[in-house]
Length: 340
Image 1 (tube, rainbow, N blue to C red):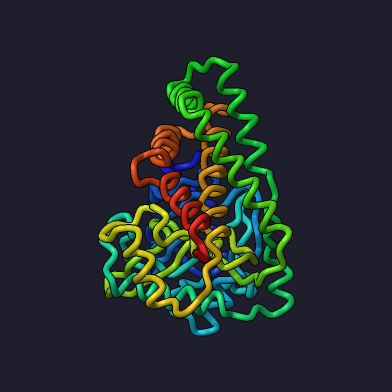
Image 2 (image 1 turned 90 degrees about the horizontal axis):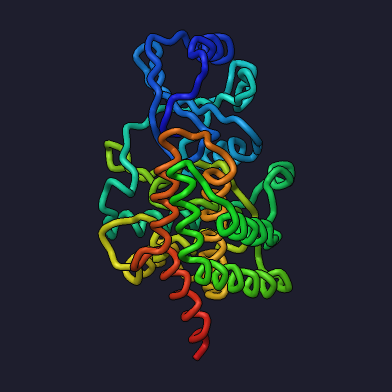
């Protein structure tokens, strides 16, 4: 969220004092992220800094339980949520969930050129996450991949809306123009994702714990050079390719060509038989979901302020040379050549 929500910040002060025994001396809104349902702040108490996340809308308990478990397991690339005085991983606050973390001074991979060592470190950390065995109670909280057509169907509906309606709002009009101009390409992408998803649904491969959103904004580098994997809002039990789609997938990392990203990442990750049809599916499906989410945000609402033009920019970036759509088709080509 880029604009401060219309929210009485005194409630945050009270919540942190009552639930975490943290009287605040400072609270600063941070204009970060693309999620309009999440606002984040930097809080200071007793000279220590904290990262405060306010989450509205649907809340998945696994989003806090999984990173807490992984941190307790000794995976040091995870920043765990702090427990309340009562032992909970979040606090309720006027329709929001408040989640508290240590504040780590950091820059994300959009800002920092990702070195060979960082790619290898990312690969090694993700392998430990994929190999982690969740206790049954926690595994029961984590959603499971179904290869459902939800976003494909939704994007098809929004394509029709963009073609049939007129929009006065500049961001909505720009989004509709993009969908109309790229309609044939988008429909082909929907079709590819549907075909690949049907194939994967009929298989019974191994499901592992996946982060599911490993773009450059969710890998950060601390001031001391430590790598952290952040924003565990959507963990899922899925084929490991759910996460393996990101290296080489044009997900915002700087410094290396896609093939080098993949090579360095797998140096750290270790030996694995990559299912390239699954990588192709997830890259196609990711673009479909992103376009559907941005189109919903812009065509069905006039809310969002500065988040709206940002959503248009993100949607357009999928079609740039070397961008996510091109890399999705590169994985499809890998599928065609697989095993030759």
